[in-house]
Image (cartoon, rainbow, N blue to C red; front, side):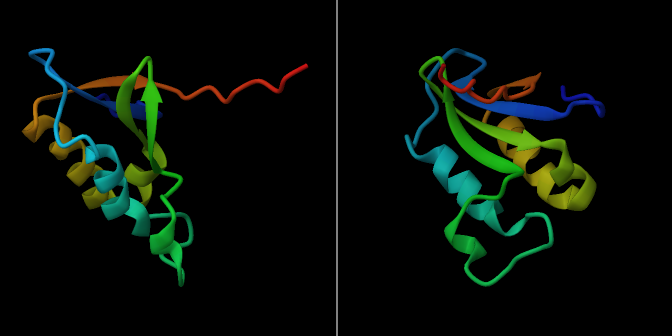
Amino acid sequence: MVSNSAKEVFIQGVTHAGKTFRPSDWADRLCGVMSQFRPGGPQPGSHLTYSPWCVPTVVNGIKCVVVNAQLRDAEPMAWDFAINFAKDNDLQMAEACLIPDSPER
């Protein structure tokens, strides 16, 4: 379950049974569908980049999609789509925040 106070939700490419979710490009596909949902709405060419509110990443070798709560505020149906995708496919979700890499010294 995802709380209403979550700032970011990580949809992990692992089912609750511990199996790796397939197809292997699921994260890229989901983020591609969500690319039009972005600050300021869709712009010409915005379909060529991921939305900052829904980005694929890899955490500890597991493909994930990070869904930012700003998506919920701007486009509640898009948020529901992403969260329901995870629920429908029995994917693990975690509330967290993505910490940017620190600059090298």
